[in-house]
Amino acid sequence: MKTHEASTPRVLVADDQPDVLEALRLLLKGEGYRIEAVTSPPAVLAAIKSSEFDLLLIDLNYTRDTTSGQEGLDLLSRIQAIDGTLPVVVMTAWGSVEVAVEAMRRGARDFIQKPWENARLLSVLRTQIELSRALRKGQRLEAENKLLRDGHAPQRMIATAASMQPVLRMIESVGASDANVLVTGANGTGKEVVAQTLHAVSPRAAKTMVTVNVGALSEGTFESELFGHVKGAFTDAKTDRVGRFELADGGTLFLDEIANVPLAQQAKLLRVVETGEFERVGSSKTRRVDVRILSATNADLREEVAAGRFRQDLLFRLNTVEIRLPPLRDRREDIPLLAHHFLDAYARRYRKFLTKFSDDATRALLRYEWPGNVRELDHAVERAVLMAKGAVVEAADLNLQPGAEAERGLEEMSLDEVECFLIRKTLARCDGNVGQAAEALGLSRSALYRRLQRYGL
Ligand SMILES: Nc1ncnc2c1ncn2[C@@H]1O[C@H](COP(=O)(O)OP(=O)(O)OP(=O)(O)O)[C@@H](O)[C@H]1O
Ligand SMILES: [Mg+2]
Image (cartoon, rainbow, N blue to C red; front, side):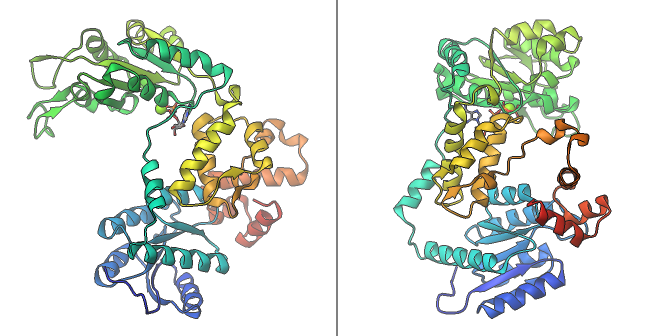
């Protein structure tokens, strides 16, 4: 694609609100940009097919009262399908950091929160346009290539805490065997990472590990997904389909969220786990596979058995060996290591020069309870990398809520604390949508903004 080296940069701006477009037009024109403004996703796609732009600045919501950002995320994917090199900066509603993070994951170069600060907006646009011009000119640094390559490094399991030693010992002793292993632990403790590690150290490592979230399969698709089907087995079966057990033949099958499988399907699983035998749906031919079965759950399967919700015989087949992962708060020694691991990964992915946490930030990481465990830490660091303005991640970038208020009880709080607590809860409930939150709280938008500022939210 041709670039506009000598000419003024061309920016396509998309937002459904005319006043936003007008404000952007004035601001950017004053800075010497050429602007084209459109108000809908189809218009964005039409514009990039017919003209060339140096940068796209797109809103994530186009229908009145929506705040999910889904329209914008879909648009982002379509833009990328047309021209993956076009730099896209997204605009998100105030406070909806999660959507911003999702947009970055999907390839947005940066994001601006509304209401925006002019200086920041201009600096983001300038940086992205310069960067993309440099890249298009082929001035890609070798270092950058290396960074991208390293970004695809295989998952590494970090575990140095004393409470993780039993886990490591188990992986060492059963990893190489064909023993079925059940991995248990609360949400986000790293069950899938353990499964990947077990597969990686086994003689099956050269074959694939197939993962199925069996807990999420509907009754109708369970068998066809796991065992496959033959053409004509049911209305939608237009062709033969290979199931996950066959795909995993010779390798490892990882059955995730195993406690959520209904009893009727547990019976079907039991047979194949015991014998390796099954039939594709609609076929009477028995097939046999050689798979090692790893499974995971955050439930207590013994309790499930006692309550009559899980078959004991299936449990005994699955948990030849059981590996229990402690919650992150019981392995605090690992927090700094994990945090740095995520910091490196995200700094690379988002091209930010961040190498460490401030002392305050480290203290905040160590103090926090991490109810969402390693996954929560992962997301907190990703968000912090995106929010960080300087070369060091500050405590404020991490935005860790002490979480103590919830248990403290309203009667023990000052009036200000109650107000702040209520506003935070309401905002969370409204996914960060200030308009909705204001309505729910019976405040005007501006009154809510004033309070947000006062409490530094
Ligand atoms: N020990 C570890 N070292 C490095 N990264 C880890 C470790 N444990 C977890 N992670 C990372 O934390 C995130 C959550 O891990 P994982 O998906 O394995 O958790 P889980 O227990 O399966 O969670 P869920 O219960 O939600 O399914 C992933 O991004 C994973 O890469
Ligand atoms: Mg998991």
